Image (cartoon, rainbow, N blue to C red; front, side, top):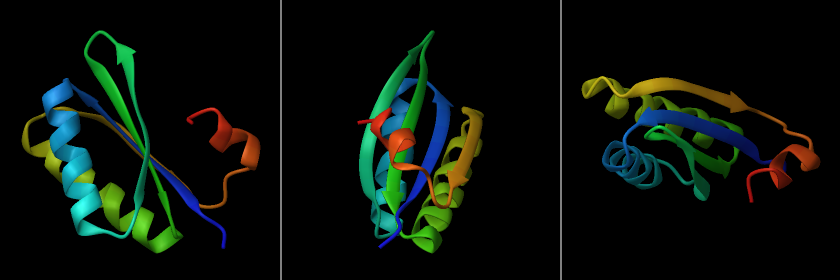
Length: 88
């Protein structure tokens, strides 16, 4: 099965945890990594089937927007295996 990669970048650790929790509860996805980028920037990486990842990223985006902490988000539907290794 081809697994998509989803990313949501936020300001603040607490918000990132809230975003990750909402994404994992709302969709059948797995947490790949939560990277502290620096300067209180945190990126959450998830994977799953394409539709589940798209749904989860939209959920995470909405949660982060409520607090004004959303910096960016994206879904890579069919990432190359070498890309996914960067985040493990």
